[in-house]
Length: 434
Image 1 (tube, rainbow, N blue to C red):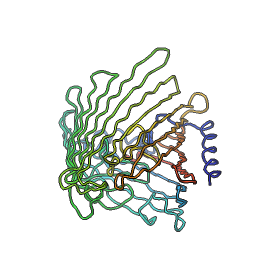
Image 2: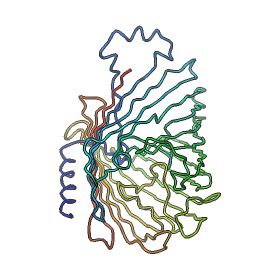
Image 3: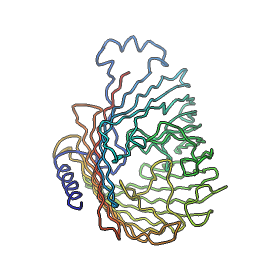
Image 4: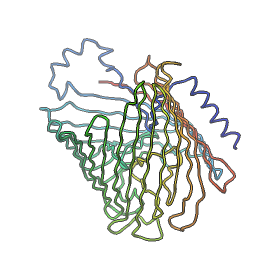
């Protein structure tokens, strides 16, 4: 098994030298917006369409096609394998009197190849197909100061976000408002339900957090400040009614050093604690609390970026993140390095091969190691863990909206002889129909 995992990593290492990626360490792949398809097929439609009211003239209809393949083996020996196809169709109206918009998105996915007993976890449990209207909203805006949105929608905040690394993303149900005042961007709201990324049903936020048969939501407030072009400060509060509260802060600074060299430094802090009835009891004590801190430094020279990071989590509990990706600097593909009591280190590098190999090709890699973890419920040691990741991205310049991503991970845990591996291959193709 070790030999097989090494072959997977070696194949991707060779691919990173002959194909391109973005080299930005990001979990979700970005896709360049393609040109409008109807205007390409019907060039003369632009003029009559422009004479329509903006509510109709500015309507968009976007199709995202996605194919995903996964093969994995855990350290316990269980195997996962799956090929799936899906995506979504998103409608957005123009703005009526520059103030009112409506929108909806239908998501779906189905298995193409799904062998029995090897659930790849790209689809619903049991490798079942699904479809759902994950977005259906009305929005009202006042210039750049306020955008009020109600009902089903996407949210992109620390700890509550799309988590879009399967066939479809998380979406949420509730009311939100966001905007920019001076140099401060704010986002606030109350979310009652979540559609998990591998589901066709909306469930309560508290149930998704691990409290079955409950119906509690989450109140959130986030502020992002940019006192200067090189400095960014983010603070957010997410209060899960009768579950847990998360306070998050992040500071990032970019400093040019000359000769095309830039220094990136950042630090972040999370405080989590049980609140109210403390329905999410994952420790020996019901009213638990824990904290997590990390710092990173990166240096960029032309197309190359190298970085290092370190993190520590207190022993009260592991970090909880049931509503999206947690925003930590050491979140890798398999291991997140936020167990109770865990201390972790990371080294990484990214390179954009657009100039030296072919446009649109980039890659990034991370190696992380953690130690000192304990089981928060049993208070027993868990032993060390490490993970090596490699990601290769390619966006063919001749086909706008099309992208490929290949990712691999090798994991190891102290006390277990076997090594786990994970390989993912995704194709995304975004088509602007209107």
